[in-house]
Length: 440
Image (cartoon, rainbow, N blue to C red):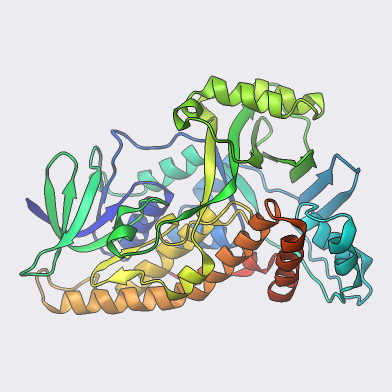
């Protein structure tokens, strides 16, 4: 058994960003990662303007910018009916028209053509619109490997410890310090624990948060390299046909990130660990799509392919949940896992890191004496302020993502309800990218 001051569980984007934010504020931490080496595999992550503000605060934005190209627009295309909606990512477009056919088109496009006919469409067509702009800002798609490697390289060399898989947390009955037990039988007594261990978080279980739930949808993700250059515009394009949603985002002039969303499939989970199974399934799934989509799946980087059941935490649980207990808290997906429908999961985790480190430093935890009894009180206060400052933000993000996600899997009547709530609660569908987490 040995002591550490601040222990972060998980060396994903959230854990590494949190460690870096603390490091920049003079707070030493150690990151416990369950895998044997850095988990920098996988496909890509979209970073919206709010995420770039956080990366600027972490000091790594200018390292990451040259690895990708800025996107110019978002385009939604229905291959069933030929309907198309373009949304600029570089200039502000305002719709302010009470009859607003363009406003209705925006809603249809933004929600992925969730409704196009019938009662729901007639209802939306009669609604007054005072809508809605898409913000100016920097939107890029980054290789997950580039993000992980960059954050890791910015940390002191001994920050991350590998092959440390957490089994449980308990409080020492005498000192009330967290005691971490790992599957290899080792234990650590620490003063502070920050859980960055994802949607199936052990730290969240310690805080008695309810288990995350799954959407009745799953997503296949992958990367495809075009050695002689891809022919696609610099845009985030979403195509829908036969109930299947396909997204395509260029990372640079050669590499393209793509995803394919569908209703969940009840098969043995082990099957989806085989990249060849994922590729063949995707090719079959896209058999009615144009040939370029099948070629994109056929030529995918096998190591990048993944099949994921989409998880979320109910927005109302975020309203009432207890996200810290003493000197233990959660960050990123462990706190607010959401569907990918806003492309904000990674950016929200980066925001968390900045806000948490700022609060800890403001309460003097960057120069508190080791062993001082006041540390526990200060950490608890810092965590309380962190949760207060983040709660409204993550509730809005998860609620908007939840409503959009439910549109894809609900009955027609429920779709009307979700659409009404989206219009009432989020008249500007893209205001989430305007958020600024503030200075570190």
